[in-house]
Length: 340
Figure 1 (cartoon, rainbow, N blue to C red):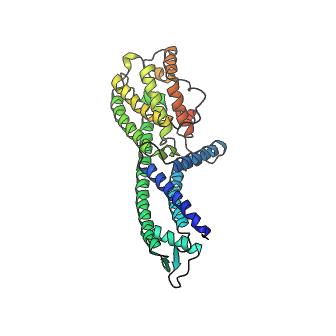
Figure 2 (cartoon, helix red, strand yellow):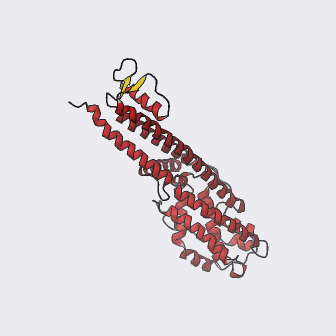
Figure 3 (cartoon, rainbow, N blue to C red):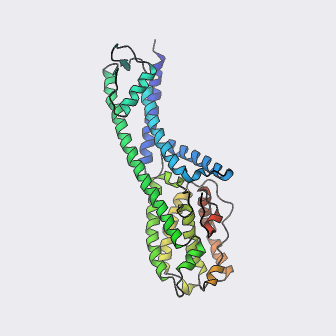
């Protein structure tokens, strides 16, 4: 009669295949994360946001790092458990001294040592077939350890770029109106053209990184000055003011404004695919009073409100992006730095 432990072998193969597919899709796919990784990340993020909204503890500040480490740990655990189930058959691992089948704990230790490319001590494969499988365990372990280290390095670099982009926008202004008024030199927005040209390249590169490494969307940032979501919203609202709120004769170059908005649009469209709780309506348009007080020629409020209403779906998507990144809209329009 077949030993029941042999039934664990196909289960181990399925788990191993699922882990390999999830890991490769997450690290190599240019469109989506692996099915296990994606569901795990979404679930953990929702828990972090739920806790942030209901407690004084702000877990979203470090959610991205925690989610990334747990994803990697899940792959390691999947490999260990998958190979462990395959090697659960009684003849798979034997004690070197006696040749007797090794106990379950010893088999798990054997797989773990082989997976991390160490030579198991006191244990031997239970036959030629198992001896051939042992180098395969070490090979898959070495491959995925190398892949994981590379993946973590790429995520770290991309997360740093997100923070740098957030701080770059913050340095221009901590709210849409302050960004525009700070760029006004009394005659025009001449210097802002060069800044926007540089920013649009940064935003375009970040859009590609977020598309490649989907876990980046969970790096909310604990510091308002470096958080990407609210600063992207500040930039988008500032572009709205420059395109529709400032009087036509005082507006910056239309080509620069159009290309900057296109770069922001690409990133918003990428993020819009994962938005699950849209805010009820688009936020109110920015107040043009600070611009008028700074001497910037502006259109009347009714004209500006009508132009803002035309872009309500886009502004609603941006507000939802901020809300799902645990940054409410009043943090976007606030003129004081906020900390989590």
